[in-house]
Length: 336
Image 1 (tube, helix red, strand yellow):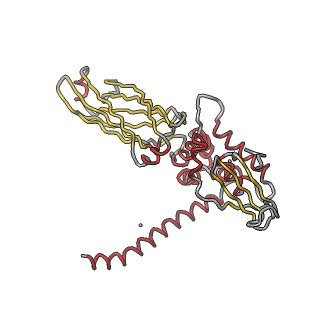
Image 2: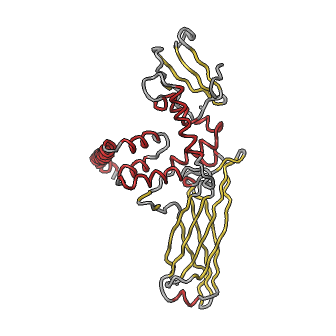
Image 3: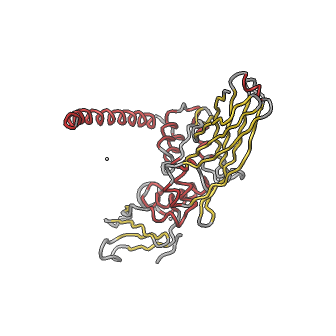
């Protein structure tokens, strides 16, 4: 081993379907094709600086983020870049963005390690795996004549999981032949989780403002009297929108909740603050990716109740995910 570096009525319906389905498919294809062509044209028009940014982040940028970036005016693209990296900062309390630093350090390292394939190292198959998964635990190389089966190849191990690269011509150009990489997530849980969540989380960043649409909530009134109002606030935060930290064999984060109720004049009537610890693990997270974390907050108002009868009141909710500093806000009308 070489440890040189450590990475788918009846007949009428059937007949109708046979007519409509191709039309729907064609329409969908044309719509998708048109959108793709438009984005391709926008990408071709990028200046060198923005083109380099989009190229360098190709492994972690989401499709939605890419579309937003391409459609933004040039004057707003720098704001997008800042927000792009902020959303991936594992510890916003420090000056350094460890995720960004690690990402570009790996890109720089691949340019040194895989400089013989006629293109930047990070654009090669070996470079892509190195950038995404980090250096392997072990590396075995089979140079020309060293392997009777495939001549030149490399096998990288992440724990006990092998990733195989083949150079069929022995000219230094290696291609990945192992495609299912899910088994190695457990060997680099924190980095891989944050990376996959970064890809799953695309937030609109237009003119420096965020579009807050990351949770659902409702307010239920259970008792309405002249001098007393009771109810419950229910908040559902999709697991797919949460960032977690790895803690031993678990994934965890804390959600800080702030809620205010103001009357039609802006006077504060009721407020609430609370923190909720969310724990899961990698397997449960996969099972719950279409589900939400439910928070139920009861409220009781016995002072200034008469002010709530005078017009449209507003509930303000702010949720902050301590992991990554993500903030989500919403406003809802509340009428008695």
